[in-house]
Length: 262
Image 1 (cartoon, rainbow, N blue to C red):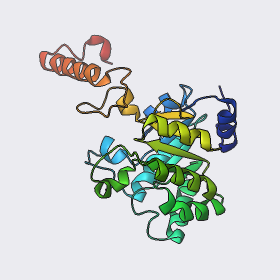
Image 2 (cartoon, rainbow, N blue to C red):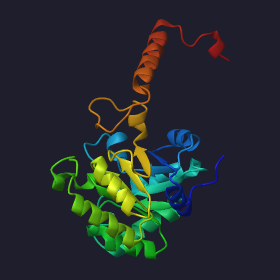
Image 3 (tube, rainbow, N blue to C red):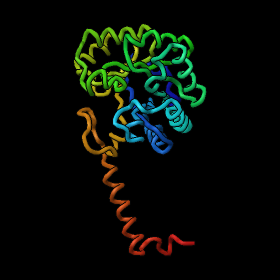
Image 4 (spheres, rainbow, N blue to C red):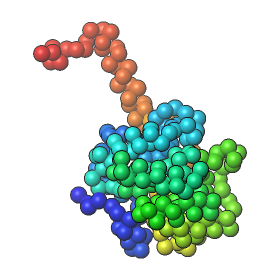
């Protein structure tokens, strides 16, 4: 069993060229599986709005809902660092409100860090939160909270702006940065330019680490999936078959059998 991952360990991993493994999780059973499987970083993402709550984007999820799910994940994580995702409008209104909400993640959930979307536009907020001794993971490129402003989920190709964003969030004190929806060659240049780890999602193989939504990886999310998703199994099919068999056995009287009775 590895000792719990810290900000310092992540930086050393980058320096040694060791890849960082990250996944999302939103509840106790999946967080336990993820934590016991050698993952270094668990993000309780605001993607729970879509994955768990069935919303069309990440905007509706609330701060209280994020606190609830992050507390559950932190309760079981013994090895991985837990990061709470700051939801839409929990940090945009003012630095004071951002610090207060970031502090809630550490105080109420026992997470290690928080994540904010945005580059130069949120660098002052990142600096303010880190000055309050709260570790911050930045997130640049395709930022889902800006879906309406971006006109949808589009790959971001402005290399000059992306590099400037990355350098600015590092300067502001972020301990790592998620690169989402960025061409691989640009992500590679950003990774080389930064001293903090880059965590890629749809940003090619040269990032210091990779993250996926665990439900995507396990094949629980069906229908259209982003190009960057690799499904390692198809649990939705397995679950559907099991539930169908259960329903058939209940209706036929096969379940419960004598061995299931007291």
